[in-house]
Amino acid sequence: MRNDPEVRQVVNTYALGLPRMPTAGRSGELLGRGTGSSLEFQEYREYLPGDDIRHVDWAAYARSDALMVRMYREEISPRTEILFDASRSMTTGEGVKARVTRQLAASFAQMCGRIGGRPTLIPLNDHRPIRPLGIEALDQIETMPFDGVTTLTELLNEQAVPLKPQAVRIFVSDFLFPHDPGSLIRRLAAGASALWVIQLLTAWEADPTELGGRRLVDIEGGAETDMLVNRQAIAGYTERLSRLQTELSRACRRVHAPFVTLIADRGVLNLCREDLCASGILRIS
Image 1 (spheres, rainbow, N blue to C red):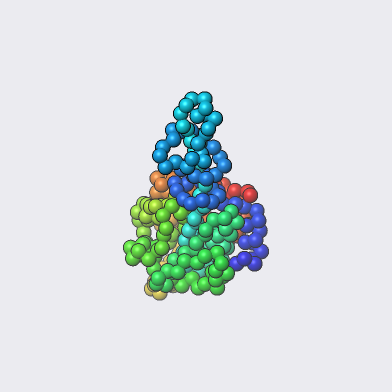
Image 2: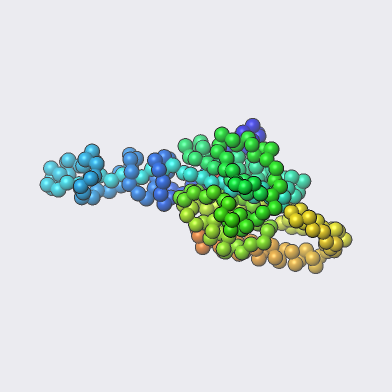
């Protein structure tokens, strides 16, 4: 994926819209709430036994006869977990959804690595244990099969997803699997310093057209059913999809997570320039 021309263009144009003040971390690029070793002065406080004597302000001591230490804002390195749905559901639309998923995952990882972060790619599939990938293994996702049938809810119930605390967590999926949006988003947000949620659909999934009589096959379970894909059936589907998106959006607002729905057919360049920048997930670098 490093050699994908669209991924290269995205990485050269945009940066992650990372929060300025994550909750905790180690020495690195972003400014945190705590005190640390950066050069940005934060405040004074009285000297306490065990404080680094190098931070004592001797000029203030000469003026006030009180030992004061200078506090500096903590720097942290953004640990970024990129979770992407690698189930069969993501292969619809003649593979466009899987392709854009791979491009987004590769772009996020490289943008994180560019600022000294520690990106981890977590494909959500049926492999046990799930094997997280570092940025050095980025090209593996180009040929990785999207063949899972286990949903994220099931993976979380199995405690199979290797999540780390205080990470910036990005999740890409179509969300077209049985789940409770409120519960799922709360579980994804637990322990994270930030959560970004991206729903990726094909154009037909977002706005289906009439097909007449069809034999529909569940791409994950293999079950078949004969159905008349007419205006009435589409209206029912559209209503359920709208309700799902509303519930996901509401659940994300509760945990201060941006939520955006992307249409894969529009291409990763358009999606980054318009939707992801508008949501705050990306910014012009």
